[in-house]
Structure formats: C-alpha cells, structure tokens
Length: 260
Image (cartoon, rainbow, N blue to C red; front, side, top):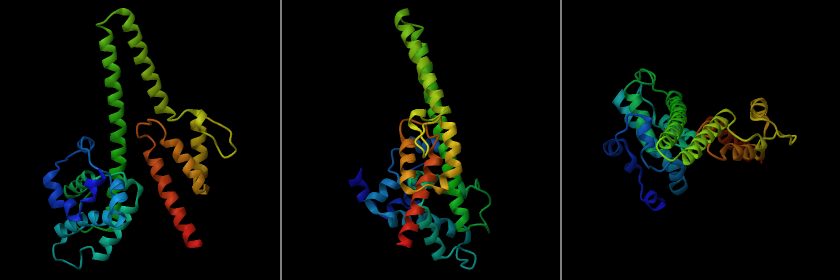
C-alpha cells in the first residue's frame, strides 16, 4: 500500500480524476471501497500533501460558485488556511478521498444548505464535521445489521440440522446477542475502566467522571483512556470521543511546545 501511496501526486486525487474513477452517492458505498485513509497517506506523503489535495476540491467549488468574481470568492489565503485546518483534524485523517468526493457532491447538490453567499472557511469545516458524524452513525448501523444477519443465519441453520448441534448453535447465537448488547450499552468491560484514584467502576460512572474532568486531563492520562476506548470491537460507538481525545492531545502538545 505504501508503495502505491508513494506514487500519488496532488493532481492524482483531484476532483477531475477522482469523480471519473469513483462513483459514490452514499456513505455505504465508501465503505465498500478499499482506499487508504488520509492518515495512511500522511504517514507517507506528509500533512502538507493532504492539505494540497483537499485544497484542490475547495478551489474547484470556489470557481464553480463565484467564477472570476474575486471580490466574493474565497482568497488563496483562506483556501490554504482551511485546507491546513482540515488536514490537521483527527476526524479528517480517518476519511479517504472517496469521503471527500461525497462531501463535495453533497455540497454541490445543496445537502449542506445553499452555497451562494455562504462559502466561508468555517462553513466548509462544518461540512466535514457533519459528514463525519453521519459516517460514524452509518458505521454503527452497519455493524448492527451485520450482527443481526449473522445471528439470523445461525438460527436458520440450526433449524435444519441435528438437534444436538442445533442446541449448540442456538447457544452461540444467544451468546452473540448478549455480548453485542453488553458492548452496545457499556462499550467496555468495567474491569478495564478506572478513574484517577485507581478505583475500577462501571462505564456509566466513568463516563460521567470523564465528561466532568476531561479538560483537566494531561496527555498521559488521555493516551491511557484512548487505549481503553480503542480496544476491542466497539462498533464505532466511541469514534466521536476518540476524535475529541486526539484533538485535545494535539492541542496540549502545541501549548507545551509554545511554553517551552
């Protein structure tokens, strides 16, 4: 994969090229593609490369709306600034070029609201935020549907085989349902959740503690929490929390470097 990414150029991922090669109209179609995330691209090509790629899409939209009306159009400085902001955001790093194509397709079609007169840097950033939220919800629903399909298949199979084997399959399906509900409701085993004092608590109690104290936590504590929330298959339920943690860690690192 890295060798393939190494050959990438910004124009390779431009709207003109991507829109011809990739046809996506909904998030589910993005999931069906095996494309490298911007995080993977960044590791090989750097953050500046990712910013240039995103910038191309903003330039194309800017030209589409305003043409040569430079007084109303976004300036080059604004385009570069918003591109850099997006390239640095944790949620954007988890997206790929098909996601970007879909975001701008939604923008062109007016799904994010009317474009003319409101193409501002903050509006574009909000598009990506709204899309990421929708993507997380779609991923969670996808996991739920796949789980239900697997459970239904086990039960269907059990109805047509030897009673002894059928009983075991019914137990397997039941165990799968119980496990899914536990992960859905609590996300993580309570034995792996602990507050600063070291006392292990149930996830609901821990989550209340986290929401109250998260802005006072340091980088080390946030990394430990990120490790807990990333463990196991949590069906995408903690993507938003993980994104907040990654952004907060970046923010603290910047503050620390300024204060040194």
